[in-house]
Length: 263
Image (cartoon, rainbow, N blue to C red; front, side, top):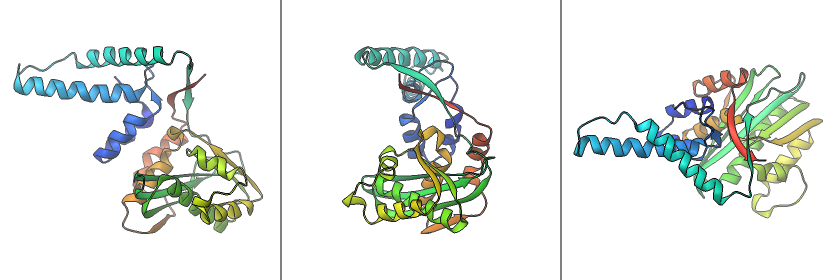
């Protein structure tokens, strides 16, 4: 079994973040065509069983763990597919895409450990070659994920304003925030932050706010996690911090993940 390339960075994360990211990922194993969020916990379960069996029963290492894991993952997926037989799925390739020449791209993300819970936000701006322009991270204290997402967007738009950008693509994996930014409907729970974001966006002559899958927003996700664990309230990065170096390179080289989506 091979870890999807877009998730290799997670093996350097804290335990809880590692488990959460892999167990909720939409990535698909390229070789097995099975959802990683099924294979991963199934693999952990079989490793745990094999460990207990080795310590307390046979004292022999089970060399067939991977075969059992694949078979039971396929069986579990097949059962689920039969239940959802009316919902056809297809596999697509998901990757971060460079903006057109003359444009910049802002990727932002927010996260909260609980609802509400300890929250953070972050993001980055890159040029048409995928080069780092600016990055940022913020600790929000106790908040929910929607507000953390909106704060991260606001911070990114403020930086875009300071840089004098006139052509900007904004990408987020929070579809609800993307929808809010593409209409003028009020949301009392998110005011006045929502109004601030809209004003900042309106000040940019040419802009687009679009949704992307989480697998194509990993640099922003990592910066949001960094913000959530940071002791500093707000940090602006003139140069890429080490935590995103590998992800930046992967994005620049158009590294992709397979993902199951509705057909």
